[in-house]
Image (tube, rainbow, N blue to C red; front, side):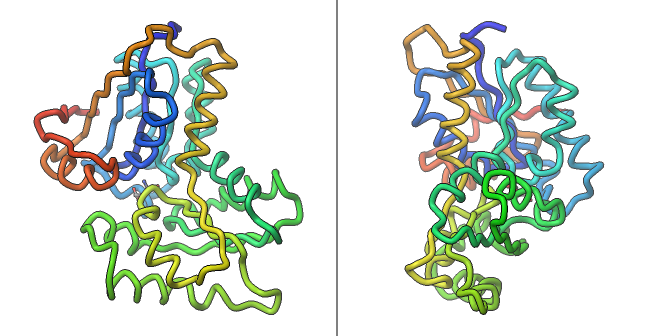
Amino acid sequence: MTSDLPIGVFDSGVGGLTVLRALRRRLPAESLIYLGDTARVPYGTKSVASIVRYAAQATDHLVSRGVKMLVVACNTASAVSIDPLRERFAPLPVIGVVEPGAEAAVAVSRRQHHLVLATESTVRRHAYAQAIARLAPGARVDEQACSLFVALAEEGWTDGEVPDAVARTYLAPRMTHDSGGPDTIVLGCTHFPLLHDAIRSAVGPDVAIVDSATTTAEAVARVLAADDLLTTHGRSGALTLLATDGPDRFAAVGARFLGEPIGAADVEVVDL
Ligand code: DGL
């Protein structure tokens, strides 16, 4: 394993570009290969068997190109397939977004009462609840599937009446509680940071809202340093973008997640 190989980043589609953005900010010298499985998105409503198979195929592809680490930027794939991936691709370091997200939530929560917003598959797996319980035994963790947020973020409908009404409908019943309600909202899906303002207006100003992108980038930096895998070339890292379908849509929608323009010609289409 050489330290000048790129880091492989995998997501079900374009949502993981929020994690890629945090990685580029934290580790500007590292080269990154991002693979979005746009042909098969969404993963959030699929079975465990399909998600594990898709994640292994994507990892096979990244490994065949040569990567020194895998970042599973998709919350659903992290929740469902992190252990099989670690087993199958050892000794490749595999970092998911659930553990860093749980760490961020536990660090900011005052009463350790969390509400995790995620896809159906992530909620069904209780991955965040388990990760938070490992860090803060006795924490209370409620979970809410918010599948419509994914479609809204993809459509660019992130502000205004529609996202506000959807956020209120999902969240209002979860905020009132005998015990005072959750004090921390965990954005347990790649798409949800784009709905931050709508979520904020539904939960009010006193609740902390955390996502896993920044803490995942920190975890990646930590593991690279510990394994002596930080790049040594000193230049800006290269970025390679791969998708399994629709480079035009990847570029148009992905730019919102990455926070900078993407040219469709810069997206290579691959078959897994
Ligand atoms: N990337 C997925 C996640 O973070 C959201 C989109 C999907 O369902 O594939 O859970």
